[in-house]
Length: 504
Image (cartoon, rainbow, N blue to C red; front, side):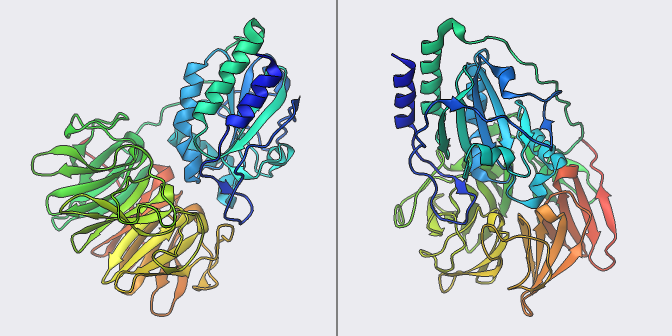
C-alpha cells in the first residue's frame, strides 16, 4: 500500500466522539480534517516544556511517528483518553513519541505548577508543553479538547481529529506508517527524565463525608483507596489495597481506580469508582467490597435515548442519598443519574447528555461535567465545574435552574449577587440550612452562597485546588487536594488546622 493510500485510509477511518470546543458552541468537528502531508509547524512556547529535562523541536523527532495530544487538565474527555495514550506508548515504545500540548481553558490551568500537579495526578509519563497563550494550538488550527495530530517520520502532519475513541484508528494508522516506512523509522528511545514519587499518607484527596459516630471517610484518590478517620485524624480503616484495579473482595484485597464521591446508607458505603465507571459498595460490617452498578464501560446516551433503561455510569464523580435513592453526578456524560438502592438499577434523571448550561425540565436541561452533589429537602444542589456553575434540581417539580454561572467560557473570581458572581471550576458543594459552601477549586477558595439573599461571598482563602467541603459541628472540613492534606476550619473564628493523619 502506498503512503498516500495509507493516509487516505486513516483519515476516512477517524470518527468523532465526545469533546469540548474552544468556542461556546454545542457541536464539535464531526468529520476528520482532510489534510495534505504538510510540514508540521514548530512547537513554539515561551512557557516551557514540562515532565522533561530539556526542550525539543519537531526536527529532533525526525524519523519517529509523533502524536500530539492537545488537552486541558480539567476536561473529563481529556482525562478519558489518557489510558489509551499510555497503551499506545507501551505498544509502540520504539516507534512512537507522544507529546502533550496543554492549551488551558481556565486561567488557573495556565500555571506550569498547576499543570505539573495534573501530570502527577494522572501519571503522565510523556513530555507536556505549556501552551498557555494558544500559540501551538493556533498553528495547528485546533478547535477542541482533546485533539490529536499525527505527524509522520518525515515531520509532516497527516491527520487531525477531535474527541474520544481514537485508539483503534490511530493504532491502524501507526501500523500503516510502520508498513510504509519500514526500517526507515527511527527506533531511538527518548529518555524524558525521571519523575519523583510523592510521599505522604494522602495523595490528591478528593471527597469527604461523615457519619453519626464521628467517623470521616476520605477518598484518597491518588492512592486508589478510601480512608476512615476519627476526628483527630487517626486512621481506623483502610478500604482498598492501593493499586489501580477493579477487584472485589476484602478491604485488604479490593482495588479501585481514582475513587471520588461517597454516600452512606446504614452499614453500606457507596463509592463512585470514577475511572472504573462503577458504583462500588463497601460493607462496613463484613469488611468486603462489591460492585453495585456499571459494566466498566463508559455509558454515552443523549437526549431521549435510554430514558427508562438501566444505564452505565460514565466517570461518576460524586454521590448523595435521599429517599432510598442514590443520586450520581455523572461527570463523563454531563448528567445526573439515580440508583434505586433496593435493586441497584441506574437510570437517567436529568440532562440531555450534551455539554451546555441549559435550564428547564429534567429532559430539557444540560450540564457541564457535574462533579459535586448534595441534597436538602426536595432540592438537589450540583457543582457544575466546566461552566463554573451551581445548579439546583427541584425533585418535586422536576426542574433544573442555575443559581450561579453563565456558560462554558464565563469564569472568574467575583462575589456579589448570584446572577453576577463568577467562580472558576467549582468541584465541591455542601448545603447547611440556607447556606451553600462551595469549593471554588481553581480559585483556591471556599465561597458561600446565601440561598435566601442569593448572594455569593468569599468564606476562606489560601487553598490549592480544594475539591470538597463538609460541615461537622463547628468545623468545616476541606480537602486541600493539591497540597495533599485535610484542613479543619473553625466556622466561628476562621482558624485553620491541618489534620495530621496517624496510624497509617
